[in-house]
Amino acid sequence: MERTLVIGASGGIGAALRDALAARPGAVVALSRSGDGLDVTDEASVTRVLGALEGPFDLVFVATGVLEGAGRPPEKALKELSPEALVDQFRVNAVGPLILLKHLTRLLPRDRRAVVAALSARVGSIGDNRLGGWYSYRMAKAALNQGLHSAAIELKRTHERAICVALHPGTVATPFTAAYAGRHRTVPPEEAAANLLRVIDGLSPADTGGFFDWAGERVVW
Image (cartoon, rainbow, N blue to C red; front, side, top):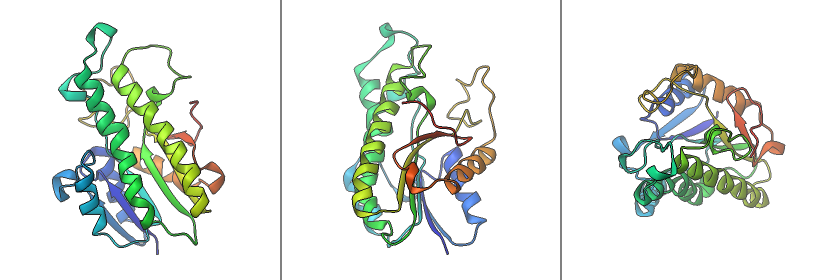
């Protein structure tokens, strides 16, 4: 019976993932800031909440993140940059998931396949950036991608069948994206969750350290 852990389960995608996983055989543990007091930017909070868990978990999905750093919308130009927004984006979108990974390793099985997946975004791809702008969000997601790739290398040394990946969910119709979707096609959170779980189900240990979109295609770094 598969055991799964969803972190960020109060958000649109996180809640949809929680519900989709609950419909499968096995057990689901769902954590959030609003429900469990888990603040991913505070290591003491992470230590307290994750320290109370007993593993192993076959799937850990980190569905945390913010689009607006320090309450500011994504920047369209350099003149709109603020140090506060940059730092806030990094704290939530890059530092938070890596601190979680630091404390999650003990909860992963060593004798079988295990997946750690975190929500990233295509705009974090340097090679795919043709429009510019969105400095804080792009930079934080690019940093997250690098952190996950490095963590995958380290994890492989102790957990041979572990898979650690960054996932791009597409543009999902949630309050998170409502003001910024524009002309992009959006999908309901339930569809996004099904897509992401389909990708995860198809991953092998050879895919660890990769960056994949909702259709299972590799995203350029």
